[in-house]
Image (cartoon, rainbow, N blue to C red):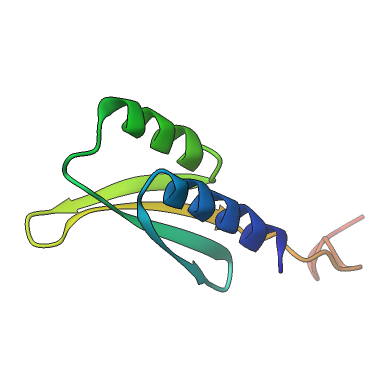
Length: 92
């Protein structure tokens, strides 16, 4: 599993331990974690949740009247290294 997958799995596990229902998805350039946030989440739990998602490169909260609140976090995948790092236009 790529490092981003391991980090995302750790984030998902910690959110699950806080009682949130999570899902993880692999994408081309990142791994994402989403969690449904219940209406009755205490202030202390919110602090813990924010500590967890702060480990991701990006995170946010999507709140709608139809679907409730969904917390999301993104962990970027490492860029593969090649012998031609400068690309075709790189000048020495």
